[in-house]
Length: 353
Ligand code: PEP
Ligand code: MN
Image (cartoon, rainbow, N blue to C red; front, side, top):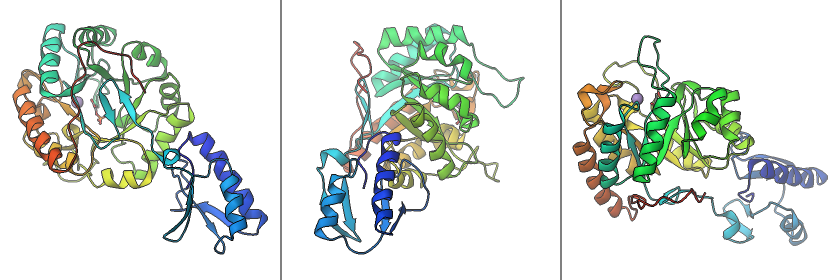
């Protein structure tokens, strides 16, 4: 097992182990064959290490533990293999708790955004999410308010202390969006836009990366590596459902990706049940299911007046429905020895990540 450092450092550590193995005529490679740099394990095909060889392995910078089959031969210290946690005010993604990120699909007028944000905060949301720039399938659909929408989000943040999550659609707009957002969102349609990933990954903010609507888990993780490789260590993966053949639901929400991603990476995994199913009546049960599957956070579309939402009206919960589900979630999580993260104080501190 390699120390949980940056992908670049892990890559270097893997190289050192490979070189050590090669000197003995043994091969070393990724344990699951994926070759992904987020994988923290490297498999050396050789005989059981002798005491002398173990001592050499121990000396290799970046080696955290050595196992022989199921047997742990040594572990440097627990601290060195502890996965990093993304902190955002009181929202700690990746420590077993579940955080709620909520808001309308698109930024609308300032008064309704402020009113909604206050209500969501009271219900337990720790971040407010709304799109100022919208990646719409058709050019004839509402495209978002752009800079005016960002200014409204800045106001929401200033007045409520809620972290703002908002989508950036193009590399050229990263700085503009990053001036307001506490977390940048990269949407499903842009998951493999590598220049956007590189630009978003290098501004120093956490990035919420949505799974492409037809992306495999491996493609999803490789996209996340573009962020990591650009210097972003605070990456939130977000499952949002896959294209499928049945028109009853907007997408097929792949909840198995939550535990699966957790076997492959240390990154926090979020679920967006709203785009996942596209129907308000199914969003509530899927919020519970996602949390039960181990999601570190939920991204949920909520609107003061769902039927009149300027975009994605069919999947928007009312604030009342959101509050009810948040309360059920608290009970569900308590039964699993986990909890719903609480809203930050009005006084917002800069991200501690
Ligand atoms: C969104 O989150 O507003 C959105 C458009 O979702 P996705 O990128 O998952 O389609
Ligand atoms: Mn939407």
